[in-house]
Length: 297
Picture (cartoon, one colour):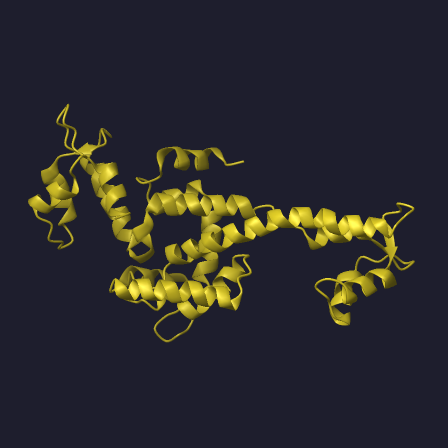
């Protein structure tokens, strides 16, 4: 079940939450970020940490982990992508980013890694569901070899099955699977063994759901965007609307957009915000819709 805070993100779309707020509301995301941070490197190819890591992120919005480290990062996050799958996904991302002229196309931001995490985790969750029926199939075969219904089979029989049937294991692998579950008489409680082999991470679906909500909240463009600037913009908007009306006058919005040497004109803003104006009460532009638009278009 989703936590109450997670439901709030889902209900509101999350588009006007800052990154730090989303992290508090989606507790699995900081854990994934901690893993990601282990792979962030400095300019000398060495792992960065502590103040150095914070300084890197502040100085260079394009800082991230090397694309060559993405697979290991995802594996540390609990996934098990094959090398072929990773090559396909990364090649696609590099082509897309280079076509867009993205600086640091050979680096991956946290949001980009999280996007890959969601794609791959969805596949693994589906595979886990398929395994559910597989568990019963395996148990049915083993029970057929246990006519007395003892729930146990001899170690030697299971070893022979593991090394000669289906996805065969070698002798060393079979020993690794069986030796810790055999009793002193050389019998194995096969139901416990099978459920242990097919066990899944109980938090996998929750983690995936929170990752999807986080990415929905920050928007598609977050994978190549300075999240610090996004949060600064949200803070500035909140200060400009202390009553929390959800609207801001176009002149004030233009001023906030151009405070970091941007070059928006009033005509461009008018085009961008078509349909976002409060025409009934003339309170200005719906800034949550505006932020959602610029983070996704």
